[in-house]
Image 1 (cartoon, rainbow, N blue to C red):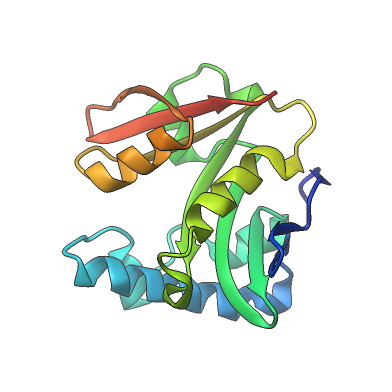
Image 2: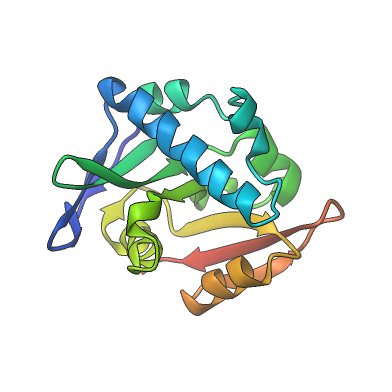
Length: 178
């Protein structure tokens, strides 16, 4: 189970934040499939494996390890994010050997499309930065496809520093905390 301190259990007055529980696994998976379908409708192949039932990120395992956080509006799952305190193999490949001990890795930010355009994604990102604290962690790292201008702009506007582009076409971003 992950070690953290929840500083705020709300990201908006009507949106609560909490660590996902095993009984929420199916709802989280459905949200990810919805997000993959939305991406596909916009011409992106990102997360497309989810549409065929493939879950390379082991969502159920991530929930059991305490790495998934969910955001509810009443009883409706509005969004989710994965916050890893240890780098995945993917993270090690992208970032090399440096700085892992102080980093939290942000993955799989997904928004229920009923909440699209409300600022929920930015709210979740701000919450990940200041609404939760992980002992010994002083930065958040994330990556995204290099040619997705909208997503790259989103992270930059939220204060994430561009840390370079990998040979495989992913941009790396980092934000120091505190």
